[in-house]
Amino acid sequence: MATMKSVTTGAQNHIDLVDVERPVPGPKDVLMKIRACGICGTDTFFLHLGGMPAGADGSMRSIPLGHEPAGEIVEVGAEVTELKVGDRVVVNPQGVPSGIIGCGGEHGGMSEYLLLEDAEIGKTVAVFPDTVPYDVASLNEPMAVARHCVNRSEAKPTDKVVVFGAGPIGLGATIWLKLRGVEHVVVADVIPERLETALAVGADAVINSATEDVTARLTELHGQAANALGQPRAGTDIYIDAAGVAAVFNATVDAAKWGARLVMVAVQKKGADIDLGGMLRSELTLIASQGYPTEIFEVTPELVEHHERFAKLISHRVPFLDAERAFELAMTPGAAEKVVVTFE
Image 1: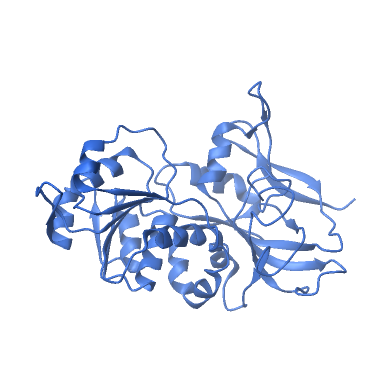
Image 2 (image 1 turned 60 degrees about the vertical axis):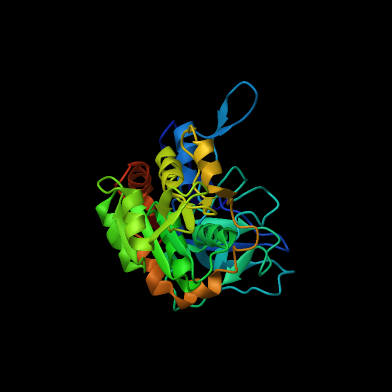
């Protein structure tokens, strides 16, 4: 029996690097050799839990991790005609029948090999050229999340936008907004190094929300407007929450003009008391953005075209056999922007 190494959830806040049976593709499947896999906040969420709930008794089960893989096809089932050995591919984690890859499904992308059942271009995988490094290609899935958020915002070129949170999703949204032709995009965060990255990928201005008055700075950058009562507010049209903290809602309600929109893409880490009266006075529209209903492979051609720009989102590249350090970096607040695990 051929085996491979795979990362699974271990004890709470720890991974296990285990030997498991190497999958064998069926007639409609392909086997992918992983070359790079990003670490997502969802991975660290499962680690904080110690796995995934297994039943009503509160017990947890270990799960394979990794849903941001890029790699090379090494085996092809007899009935697969669109794909061939050697194709470089990115994956739709939600496109296989055995459950979401790396999020409770049978397989995880943080493994030496990944079985892709019912492999089909445009549904399960997309092929990318060898001009794009594998580590940058592994950003395809999180950049689809960021793209859906921007699509949900319906931002127009004349809009003025602020993105809260300069992590991978916030920075990805910034890139997509600028590629969409949006006139002015501001990024707010509390970590200076992340704000430097925001400027490097195309933000027009940044705000250190730990030291600056957000409303005053947005008014300076986007002009002055008013809410429904005529009270002075910033001229910002769209607020994007890619941070997942209550302070973003508070800052938005404090600054929002009449008819502004708030797009929530980050998972809220704690419940927040929201000033509903303030939302009413601005007729603030709250828009939720979840996943990537159509965007998972829509983003691939532009990721390929602008791969050098997207590469700036990666702060750490860590070898697979040092995966424990990679996850420690990802779980330490402020230690890393985007961690990608690389494979030989």
